[in-house]
Image 1 (cartoon, rainbow, N blue to C red):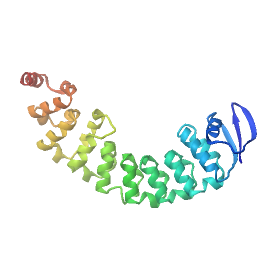
Image 2 (cartoon, helix red, strand yellow):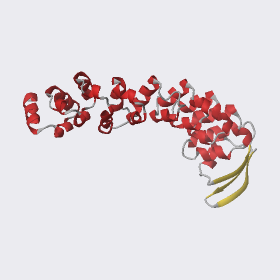
Image 3 (cartoon, rainbow, N blue to C red):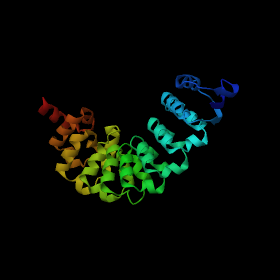
Image 4 (tube, helix red, strand yellow):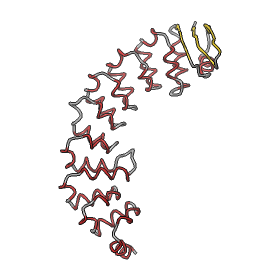
Length: 264
């Protein structure tokens, strides 16, 4: 028997007793979105009912359902693993003792790297788990143990997802072609916004014509940040225009006319 106290639509229901209730009916009851669940006692079979409810509600009210569960169920590692598989965002509700659990961390971080900061120091110092986190959330690198924050492979992965993180890294990466290219073409960001990261490139890279041609073929919006010499280079202008014609507004009138004649 599952006993729950909760409030629905301002009507308080004392000890709603659910005996041999089906999972479907439990889901229908919980779908009412209780504003307050104050007490719950559970048997082993209630784990299945709770998981059904969590599956049904997931992110919307899943945290309320999980919070309502009794201590015994929330202290059950196997149940917690299943619940987090359904909804990794429940990490904020679980028993704190589980925040040092490798398997639990892996389940959460493989899709929600932003929760790396919630885990223990040991988890945040684990290379494989940090890699899982930054592979879907570049900013997670900021929450990794300091010993991993300058790991080259992790830096490259993180920058690929968010070039802005380059501003937090050491200047040794400003002279790295792969890192700069990742920073200006970050997967989850607007190219025009990411182009601003080109200003962080070292003088050597900013004066390397071959690198400029490679970079501008990936993001034409870096054109305004190029040295004047390269802004007047017809090959670079052409490559930038092929990437995005919008950059032609930054090209000198005379050069733009010449380029249009060539393209015609």
